[in-house]
Structure formats: structure tokens, C-alpha cells
Length: 127
Image (cartoon, helix red, strand yellow):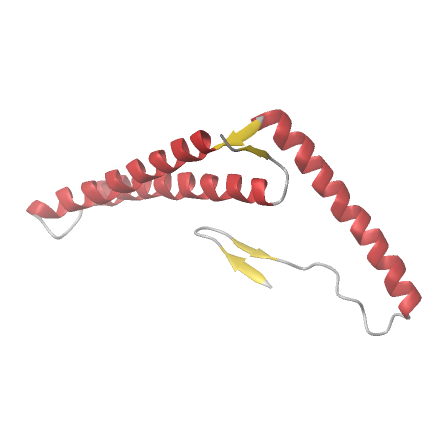
């Protein structure tokens, strides 16, 4: 299975038993892989909670507002640029690309933090 985000394609390649392995070997391999997955979960939970503390609605709202401002700035800049001409200069294209990148990054951060809560890496404190 693959997941497409705004900027990155992530491929899930979790354990699928080899048909040539006997059932006992498949169970043993699955057990090892579960230990590996848990180690990654525990590391993420520890590092994320130490770095970010807890998440609450206010943190998500600040990120959402920042992303909304970035989107609005990007679109407003493009609209202003085409007021006088439909052909954009290379400098204008670069400016739009920078503004879009800011919007994309903030959107990705918001989604990443949401996934951290969903996966249990980051505690969410409802008020």
C-alpha cells in the first residue's frame, strides 16, 4: 500500500509472510517484526513527547491559522501578480513557489502532528 501526501509518497511494506516459509517460521518472523515495530513506536513516543510535550486544541489551532494565512498569502500574491499581466516573470514564479512551499510545509506539519496523536506518540489534552 502507498500513501500520497502533498509532497511525499510513502510506501507501506510491512510484513507479508513468504509463501515458502513454514507456519512456525512465519510466526517467529512475525514476532521479530512486531518487536521491531514496537521499538520504533516506543522511540517515537519518547522522543516526540520530550520534544513537543502535550498537544492541545490551541496548538492545532495555531498551526491551522498559520497554514490558512500562508495559503491566503500565496493566493493573494498570485491574484495581485496577474492584475497587470498574465505572464509572470521568473522572479514572480519563484516568489509564488516560496509562498506555496510555506503553505505546503505548514499543512504537512499539521498532518504530522495529527498522526502523532493518532498513533499515540503525542498525548492530546482536551480542555
